Amino acid sequence: MVRDNQIPDRILYYLATPPVMYELVPTALKQNHMNRATTAGGWRRIVVEKPFGTSLETAQKLNCRLTAIFHEDEIYRIDHYLGKETVQNILVLRFSNGIFEPLWGRHYIDSVEINVSESIGIEERGKYYDKSGAMRDMIQNHLMQLMGFVAMESPAVFDPEPIRDEIVKVFRAVRPYADEEIDKYVVRGQYEGYQEEKDVTPGSTTETFVVMKFYIDNWRWSRVPFFLSTGKKLPEKNSEVIIHFKATPHLLFAGQCSGGSCNKLVIRIQPDEGISLKFGLKIPGAGFRVKQISMDFRYDSITKDSLPDAYERLLLDAMLGDSTLYSRSDALEASWKFIDPVLAWWKKKGDKGLYYYPPGQDGPVEKIRLIAIPEACPCE
Ligand code: BG6
Image: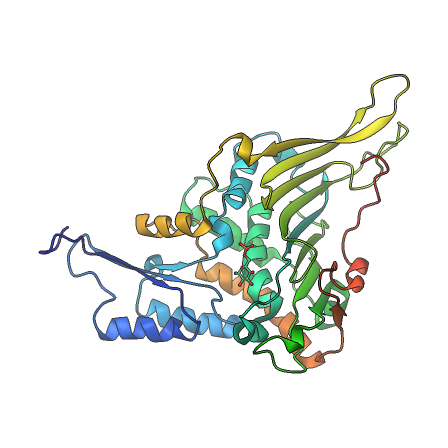
């Protein structure tokens, strides 16, 4: 349907604004009758940036307000990690190949690691970041979504709702922490000098680093630890998913790897986008000595074009009405439900249990007690 001025009656609103505007703008749109199309076949959609709420309660409130103005299928909650080609490829890698499925679960996987490291600090975003911290800024959304793609079951069809249904099931199966477990399973840190950053409250206990270990209580993932970690001012920018497969039950060869580091699938989200599978092979010549090698795929080997920017893909999808790569309200609420008790616990503890780390180093040393550090591989 085309209006008098020949412009189709289709408007996508994109709220790349401070979160405080997420209620004000839609309310103003409604007051001015701009939330409904005026012709049949027209549409209005709204894209809302993260953070979507700061807790379960605020996320639910925001959902209520938005759904009073727009229908659920007109609301697009953006998470730019889902717009990354390498993240979408996790689904294709898993569900277009039969060979991984039998290995993908408790029988063959030792642990799953998802790391998003950044070398930058908080830049000029002190006002926002000091209230948010790494847990709300990265874990609750980007890392949880990545975990959803790694852990979900195959949908029956590749359509938005079945895919999002599977993600919600994973989030709901994540085992919640009891208060007394939080210090054992979650380590938080702050880089030295953070408190002198612009717009940061002196004495702030906001975390700039988090690593957490948890379990997903379902048949596929029973007893397989998941590790999520993220931090600012770390040595380098690097995002990756590492699937650590179980070791062989018995060692036969000299130099053979013996721990979870032997066979792993590394999905490099960025930079140096690609996938590597690590396994042991015989070193040519006499005897049977083993060397760990890596079979590598690099994105630049299939296309010389630079990968599309995450936002290009996501905004195009919203224009096309495809919400597959957008977060649904129930998934967001399930992730807040898991995260909220940790944030409440930290609030109660203040700076007790907050570890400081020097910028440019690998985060607080206390993470070592948590992170799956597989037995060093002598031959890698
Ligand atoms: C944003 C966070 O959502 O993601 C930032 O607010 C973070 O703090 C950024 O730096 C990381 O995105 P990317 O695509 O550079 O990994």
